[in-house]
Image (cartoon, rainbow, N blue to C red; front, top):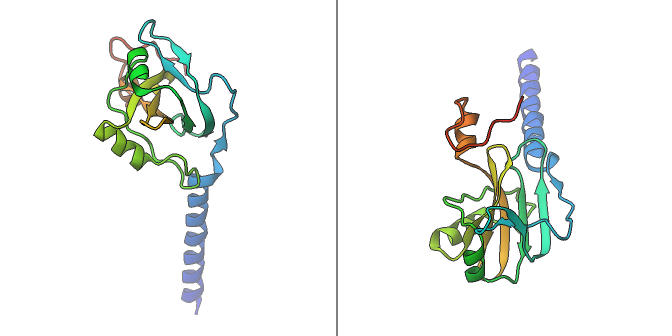
Length: 174
C-alpha cells in the first residue's frame, strides 16, 4: 500500500513539474513589445552600414529578458523587395527561430521555406543588437515582414568560451 502512495506521489510531482516547465517555456517569460511607432523596424544601409528605420505598419512583437534570442516581430511594409535589395544590407544564412504557438503571425516554417525558395529576402536589421546577436529582418513579396534575433559568428565563438575572432567588436565586461 505504501508503494502505491509513493508511486502516485512521484507521478503527480512529475506531472506538475512538466506542466510548469511547459508554461514557463511557452507563456511565462514572453511579454509584448511596446511599439514606438517610428523605429521598431530598422535595417542596415549599404551606404553607411548604419541602421535606419523603414516604413512599416501593423507592428507586433514579443520578447523576453530570459534570453537575447527570444525576440520575434511581425509587420507589413509598402517597400518593394527590389528597393530593399538596392538600399539595405542582405543577411547571409538567416534561420528564423520558432515562436510560441500563441504568437500566430510568426510562422518560422513558412518564413524559412520562403527564404529557401528565394521568395522572401533577408536583411541585416541591427548588427550586435546584443553582443554576438544580430536582428534579422525578412520581407515577403506581399509586404509581410518578420524580425528575429540570431547568433552571429562572433557570438558563436565567444559563447563557446573562445576568444573573439578578428573583426569582432570587443566583448562587454561581465
